[in-house]
Image 1 (spheres, rainbow, N blue to C red):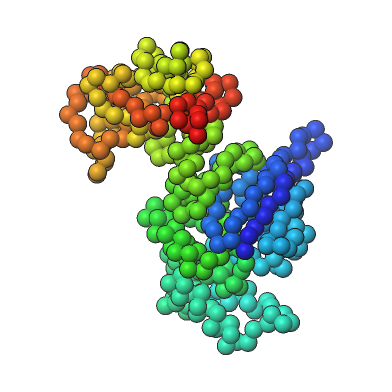
Image 2 (spheres, one colour; image 1 turned 120 degrees about the vertical axis):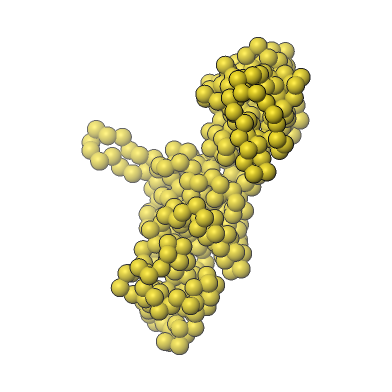
Length: 368
């Protein structure tokens, strides 16, 4: 089922007469295609959870409309929208077993939607098998690990056979290993069920690893929408470039003169089509090529071997952070404190306007 947001806005009133209204979400227009998993991504306070709560019916939009397929659900109560909602804190009933927790949404059905005990039992077992907890049905939440509790919460949302699945920071309370395992499970479940899913997270690695598309938000405003790799490779502005990437993008103060990019005194790259002037220069960690004759000179601080990759930590007077981090694929014997030189991969070098943070395109990117 398609989920369409038309000019969705949410404004919270100030708590006192002198305070300003808070625009949590501003003019959000987007269509979630049927069967896709969309990641709403951004820092705390960017409006992603508020958007999710408007989709679920827990928050009423100040303006704009929400459609599930052809149906306008903007004013429809949450219980009538056919959504499954999974919260960050699981929200399980501690005195109920796993089976009872999963069955709970079915017990509240009335009229034509009411199910028999056998039908409910069958539904619960199907949902439990889907999330691989069918052997834990007699346990209570305090007997489960965090990952198992999260699976119970997902099963409880799925047992209703929702039209739309909404996940609000579902992995935040898990350790790193469980987080990786559970996000893989969420992706598997979503693929198997084909349910249109909206996944809220502040963790860009989570969003990029399981989403068909991501929506990057800041201060209630959508910054960019696209496939994860496309947004990473081609950010529209400085905020998106800085927000995506682990390790983060390396930022330098630079300038363009006669279509040549300078970092400090080093002429590091030809940038055809870029206007003259001071710029913000972002270089992805994988964009550096160690080269004894490379144009970018840095002072080597450390070389860290991390499995298949090697991380070169270096300093440069034009950096906006104390050090840069370059990820390369071969071991290097470099003396600490000496000079290391880099060539640059042009498609991993991004330029931004110093005053607005908007992307400055050059070469093929400018014409594409």
